Length: 96
Image (tube, rainbow, N blue to C red; front, side, top):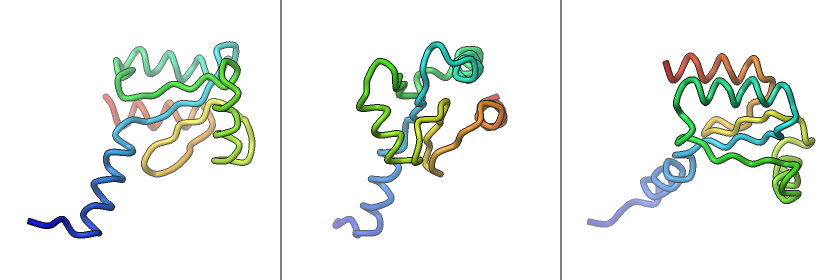
């Protein structure tokens, strides 16, 4: 049975966003709020972590995605989300 182009697109999108991405850096207190939330919810396995201070390519990706290097930045299927309090609220409401 052939897979339609539309089905293939949605499968690809689902696979692509099966993990969320968190852009952060360790010394950022706001990043720590999000990292602590992820740890307390036991959902580390749902993330790819990208420390923009350890890898300059991650900072470039973040600029391409959002126009700046503000962290933390959560990227999920809906797009990028900034502001630690908003990210924390999203995580708590979706993973408790």
